Amino acid sequence: MNMRDRLQRLFVAEQGKKLAKGQISRREFLRRAGIAGFGMSAAGLMRMETRPSSVLKRPMMQDGAALNDAQIAWLKEVGGKFAGSTVRISSESTAPSQIISALATNKDDPNSFSNLTGIEVVWEQIPLDQVLSKLVQDTATESAQNDIYYMDQAWVGRFVNDTVDPSERLADGSEFNMPDFNFDDFVPELLPALASYGGRLVGLPFDIPIFIYMYRKDVYDQLGLAPATNMDEFLAAVKAIDEAKLTNADGSDIRGLVPQWQSGHYALQCDWTAWLWSHGGSHTGPDGAVTINDEKGMAGAEYMMELAKYVPSGSSTWDWGGQGTAMTAGLGANVISWAEFFPGLDNPDSPTKGLWETADLPMEAELRTKDQTSFDETPAIGHQGGSCMGLSKYSQNVDAAWIFLQYATSAPVQTLAAASSNTPIRLSAFEAPIVQERAVVTAQTTRHFPAALKAIQTRMGSEPHFPGWATASGTGGPIPTELGLMTTGAQDIKTSLDNIATAINDAINEV
Image 1 (spheres, one colour):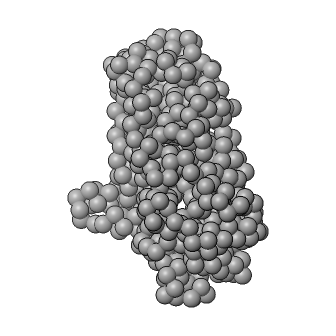
Image 2 (spheres, one colour; image 1 turned 90 degrees about the horizontal axis):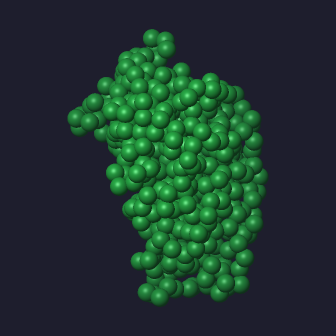
Image 3 (cartoon, helix red, strand yellow; image 1 turned 180 degrees about the vertical axis):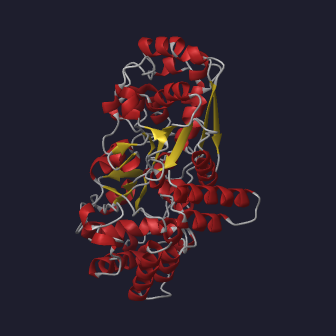
């Protein structure tokens, strides 16, 4: 780590302390962190409501997601060498964090990690800005408070030299490697997207929010519609449903599209990417050029503004939480958004329980390739955010931490988390009987998993990664602010995109 990098990290850590004391706003913290080269992706700014699952109240062995005999013996014998030690993690309070930390520390389960090994797991779940603050403090001083680092995908390049490469640990043949860990079982597309930098593995995938296509099947059936296979068909379905003037049982209107278009909010930027990328546009071009206001960007914006004719009133106030609530209420019949919404649609108290279905994402009208952009931007309609878990190379308890990291990302643990409707990171978890059994209309359903997996494998899009991106694209930043002016009709498309192009160029050149 050079002196400039160390000073940047200490600067961000100091800003985190100011944020905690209320001396600066979260927005200002994100701005200052972004200037220092620490951005955040979609997953890092989104909270999905999760509910305690009955699956988690029973021991793992009773649910068909069992550690095998060799793994149990290894946790007892090898993990047991570290009995009385503590492994520490700080992460967001996301669904996988809640589920896996509960599994690991379940005192009533004889096969929980803590009961098998005697290792205490202290898993602090805090806002992502605080996670970043702790992480930069740890790495700047090279004296880890945490043994495992939770990293937003936008950070992996900055912490590539602060973690132990998991592939090196897995290849060393030591007793600390979990039996039947099966590294090849990770969804392969997630390794470069979430957990690698410059060809080096920084951590192991942990969390993967991604856009999928969701629609009201009852409405489609009533109007004789089929799921859209391309962007023209999607717009036609949105328009046909809106023009049908259908209503729900409570008298509310069923509009063509439910968006997440809160003016000035990062959710609006996430939504926008689907229409930008699906029309051949991108934020950046080769060699750091800014292309968002070219003819392809204009085509994406024009498509979005056509969709704007068929959305419920109040859409300009909805972030992802508002969008999820509107979906549950049935205020529209089409959505391309986060897969994490789907389980809540089947909850017993949902007015639209069992009415929503998934389909393959419609094919883009045009699509730029990654090598036609800069800063790792990857155009595709399936906008993703994600995170990984890395082993701190500064940990004083690195072997115990490695044992826990393998447990937390192992197939049995990931399968049980998936049975609580968390999109898994392992191929086997998608196919496990306990997960398949929940692919019905039920609370914490998994019937959206095939759509999520296909989006991950074939349609996954990523925003640019450069130091100033978080400031430009985040809530209150110029991109969602300009998009809000556009979607509400307060400003024309060209002016909005030209202003966004200027903001992106300024962010790229920020020092």
